[in-house]
Amino acid sequence: MKVYLAGSIFYYGDELRNKEWATKIRNQFPGIDLYSPIENTEINGVEGKKKFAGSKLIANGDNQRLDNTDILVACIDGDVLPSGTCAEIGVMREKIRRGDHKYIVGICTDNRECSRTHSLEKDQGAAADICEQQYSYQNLYVVGLIKESGVLVSNIDDAIKFMKKVAPEFMQEYVDDPVESV
Image (tube, rainbow, N blue to C red; front, side):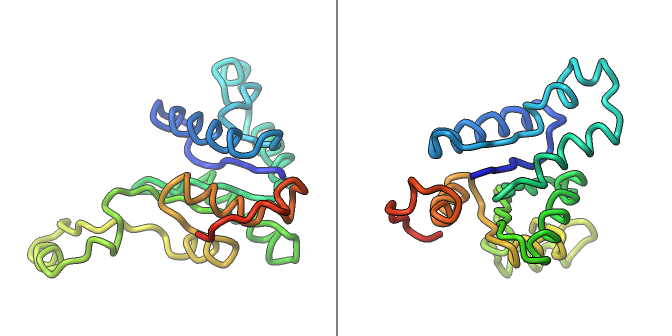
């Protein structure tokens, strides 16, 4: 099973998240072929940046892996969705739309929990003054692409549950391993 771990990679917290999630995925799927762009130091590490990894080199490096990916795990955290991640979601969605057997697993860890924390008090407070809306927002087009192509979850553990559910399609050793659904 080939997995591509997409998400913002430019800040310290991004690095910690990506390393943690890559480790969790690898621990759950020994022998998995996992690509995490942050680990591609030729184009994304300090040495890659010193060499000037230009836009075409970065696009080609990531697309070579994305082209052969079975499951895109995409972190869509942030007030503005990461543009590279959105592009990766779009590329993967197009492959699925044309008939390739692939999945997208979106992860949104926003602790405001979108509509799950709905209350009349929050609604009235937000309506009382400009810029007081307290619900998170994710671009609905991107959310729709993810939901049409797989699943959207709120944490890496649920993403792994979904991956285990579809793993038999890609990994023979998981054919007889029943997994609860997400």
